[in-house]
Length: 264
Image (tube, rainbow, N blue to C red; front, side, top):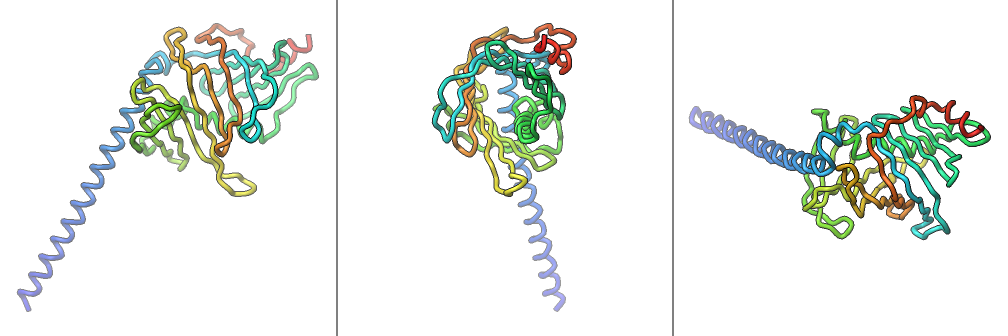
């Protein structure tokens, strides 16, 4: 009986040791995978401009917007000027007269026209904030710095007909964003995330693809950006001109000042 007891104890110790070893092995694999994911993201940041990109003061893109319905293009395009200043300042000027503005400051949004200013509908503000919260810039500057963020390297995939490294980041709030980076240039070619509709509770997929990179002021810039909703092409932005680190007027982000200029 004593021998059986010793054998049972030895077996229990062996099983426990095996479980610990398996857990350690699994942890090692996860750590190695996370390191691979971080290396891919670090290479992407370096390709985008490195520290200068991280410290960029602001950016402006000017071009044309084409709209699509169920993947089919609507007629015509709209002129736009888009300004962005990290972390929470965005301004879109539309039409050749630049007299229709959308301004997003932190978590609020306004429309400014010759009729005056008004708060944007919540669905427009919510859509914009979701995209900003899941942008590549936010993923790098916020999510990547949080030790609670989970990094997953998902191997080689294809985007824009290029072989890519795919990485998914999962935040402490259980939000996820997937980025595909060109395997050679390391530049981002696609960003994708999912969100649940608050009314219907179904999941929606929001994606952007980046193509035709050109260098401006040392920063590689995608000259064509295509937005998708649930797999259907939704918007396409054709960039004609880009500027970085401009000196903007002191009241540039003031909604009242913008309203005054348009009325004038």
